[in-house]
Image 1 (tube, rainbow, N blue to C red):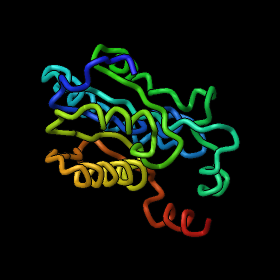
Image 2: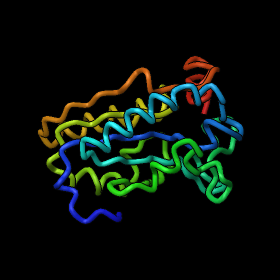
Image 3: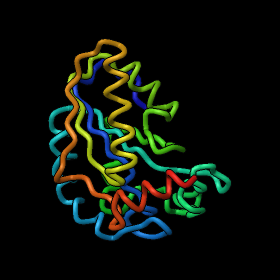
Amino acid sequence: MKIKNLKMYKGMLIVVDMVNGFAKKGDLADPKIGDVVPRQIELIKEAKANGYLIVFIKDTHKEDSVEHKRFNGSKHCVENSGEELVIDELKEYEDLEDTISIPKNSTSYMEAPEFRELISEATNIEKVDVVGCCTDICVANGTIGLANYFDQWNRNVEIRVHEDAIATFLEGIDKIMLMLLNY
């Protein structure tokens, strides 16, 4: 992590999986995800103006990732494929000061070791805003895990998922859940 004092932040914006592999190209890409990008940019600018820490979560897998099996063998966001990179529309914000990018190899950003380290050190966080894609999988899993973490450590943190800044696949939850349940 490039930020030395995580205790200085009272707010955090988490941008979940706005990567090429979900929004631009690949087995799990859906171009409709791009519809929420303008609202995400507004929220990123607002977060920056308010001195928030901005965290980009990037789905990133090895070629032989076990997660691919859960998605009927659909390889997605493979490291060095370009699918694991933040989409061009948001790239300039990923490189700002007060911004961290964290790769994850699961459907929950809470399981990424770097994120766990970050959240345990950012002890003055009072508000967390969440935007991104794969709403019914990665946004939900990560945010529920984050809420559970705060509860476990008795931290009173407001979490807001911005409905107008999240999106998911066109297939919908029913098809995705069937894939996961048939694993």
